[in-house]
Length: 471
Length: 98
Image (tube, rainbow over all chains, first blue to last red; front, side, top):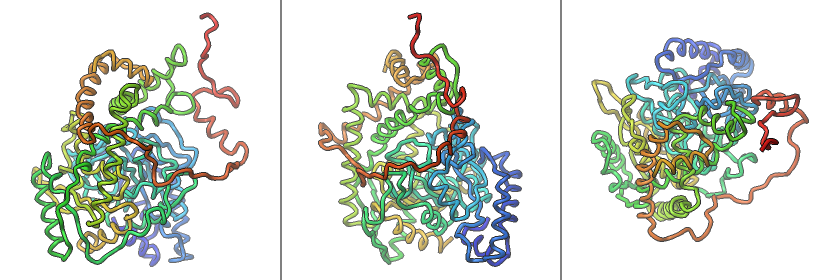
């Protein structure tokens, strides 16, 4: 598959047409997706949009919207008017979106074609896409392994070469970790950079939508289209919210060495160290940093996130939309609907959230976790006075085997490097830093670049130089 | 965590649990709660003194009608599990026999 930038050039020159690319993508889905299962739904009727785009390029060439005729796969927790948005949950199995999410409206206005809805962990809760109510997704690079999650279907769709890019959402690593497992670029914007209007909410103070692509340039292009203030999401920011974060020629990179000791795969660590040494050899400054609070972010995340989950998912009551199970009285309808509609990870997190918010435990859990979060932001503000970007591996391991992570706590530890980023609200970019060999197969692993609030452009600038130019 | 506590949480969360689920969640929740309790080790006895707000607060837009009458009505009604004309049908809350 070509990148978005390459496709656009070929559309303008007439070497390829959106209709041809759309048909090729559909054929690829038919050929490959029975095994991988990246898609929950394929929008074959969108072919008419590809045909219209083909005509538009013939008439107007470069004078067309920037994403015209570019096929994109969309995670199924992002609302597209008239399409099922199930969030891979039985409770929304037949829910048709009645409006476009802001990110969808902006992509649509830019000419993008939505080719299908992708599989995910139910309500974005998980790191492997095994928690989907509609069956798991396999990693296209090794089908015995998971693609990561929760945006695993989006990652697999791009990794299979079906689409040049896909949309995901990231609450604790759900774009970056699948990008790492599938050898892609994944971007989690500064909190508030992208509107959450029309995303099926998980943890509202953590959720952001972002792209999965094969180049940093494409990620930047998509981000430039979907980002910006939105009157339907009061938490969206404007460029002056955080001010300018300078783009430089040479950077100071901070490496939290203390953080890279426990539970990290030896090959991942060796590849990471080599990546850091290459940065130093290229004339950048690399310093060791200490992030005692950031390192403990995972515990705080598994309080804040379930608390927000239990509140957000209270809306699924079998009344206004979605699954409704019959019962003897109203309470019985609620309890049966939610029992039948939610999977086990979703139930587990709702119960956990209910616990940490309940009277007598609120201060000990939720209050402390929010305090950790406040202190983490202060810690990062201090560190970012002397370093420009913080580096970690994206995930502690390469893609693991399907069914390998049975224990929920072990699965949660997959997110150790990614969740503090969401708690702090800073932006982070993941791109491939190398591969490790497992059972004779080369598995990609990602490196995570973390910038201060509002530093999204800095990450794209670095990523284009370090990754795109050497790809 | 005890089974009774899990059952109480399920009641608060409006989720019916099977006996097997109660056993499983009670075990798992105990381990998870033990782990997340480490937040206290990080911040000690400190408590949050001021409410934490995001980068933006008190953001308003005009209170005005943004859609035509009935523009979404049919679509929204179509999503409802049970309707009667333009109304959603729900279970009776008051029991006249009680």
